[in-house]
Image 1: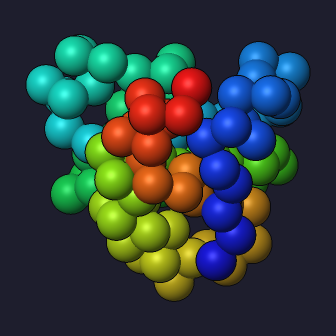
Image 2: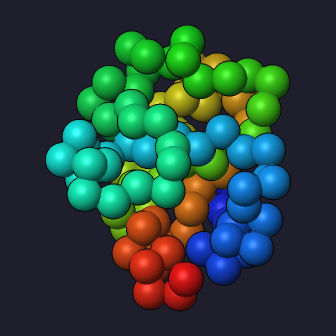
Length: 97
């Protein structure tokens, strides 16, 4: 699984070309987000058609665990997706950025 550190991501945003995908819950997303669209982990497989296949997708959550699970589930359904995990999630983002 490919990951990117928060500092690496911050250095290339907003020009990264990434599609940002937040897999947390609505209340977490409302409290703080980095501009990604919200598809909670529990809905990820049902809403796979909302995820672009022609673009790199950065998946993130609070600590990086739910995003890893989301990536595994998505790749089982579509191994051609270009998915990357935000290492340490938004907790690491807030600590390092």
